[in-house]
Amino acid sequence: MVAEHIPGAVEAILLVAEEPLPPELLAQLVGSTPFEIEELCADLAEQYANEGRGFTVKRVAGGYRFQTAAEQTPYVERYVLEGQSSRLSAAALETLAVVAYKQPVSRNQIAAIRGVNVDGVVRTLQVRGYIDEVARDPGPGQAVLYGTTPAFLERMGIDSVSELLPLGEFFPTSEVVEALERGLHTVPTDESFDDDDAPFREAGDTETA
Image (cartoon, rainbow, N blue to C red; front, side, top):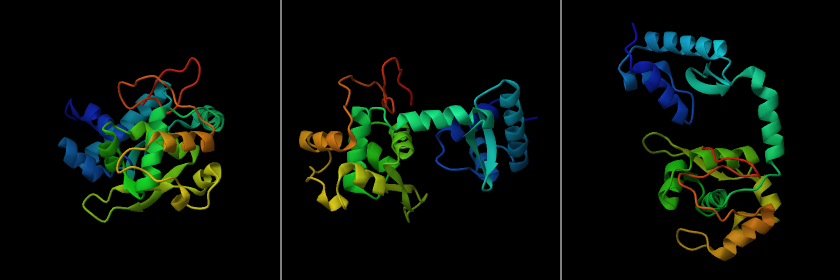
């Protein structure tokens, strides 16, 4: 029988994982066995399906990850398509500036520069097509490194990132943020954010990670 703490621990780990995690690693992290992890993930997927959840646990490339339930695909596609014209938050603009000027850069490096968790904002910028995974850090853990995309250059009206305005050592100046706003046709919000802010906000929206 799986220990009581393991299902919640596995869910929590998968929630923050950047890529599919093999059962061997999950077993090591939560004090279980690969077989128990495989059985647990199958049970969780069945539980989510029976409860009509919008997500599931799926085995991909030899590991497990959370994934949108297949029946919810039309709604996710609508979000992605309609989200392209939504406003970026001030946090997203700042994160985008950090990636543009410090690339290739990892999530942890971005978070260290901004001083907050950036997982939600990074995912949003990827969905918008402004940043993408460009390499792996050769050091321990081989963290994913992010850089800007051709779509970013196109929206900014430049041929390469070398044409961007000069940036201070760590944070974008008001001139840089204004240039980003003009290029991306966005308006940063004036509101303060308690965590890492919503990926973007429209009238009536609430902040999400």
